[in-house]
Image (tube, rainbow, N blue to C red):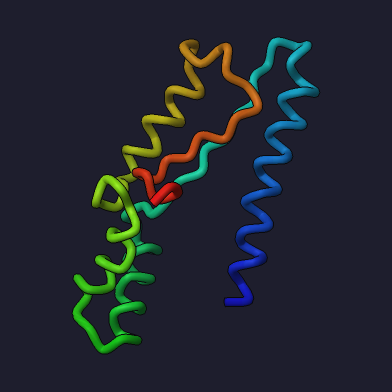
Length: 111
């Protein structure tokens, strides 16, 4: 998939920018962090799952299974799973975390 290399490059760029911005702003007491969601149940992901199933001539549930089978926790994330991490990073309890990209993928990365 030629678009995948572009997508991955931009993800990596966000990580690099996060680290550099954290270094630059640390002396001002500003923390900079990012989050990297995995597969989130959104309208965009719904269309991807449906298209995956249709291309294979399978039911929609099969399309979702192609993604959930890659996730250690066995389910796609809900928007709240991601927003909880964002809320934490924006709050005072994360004041000693900077330059980090928090992966919110239910264990898909290490599966």
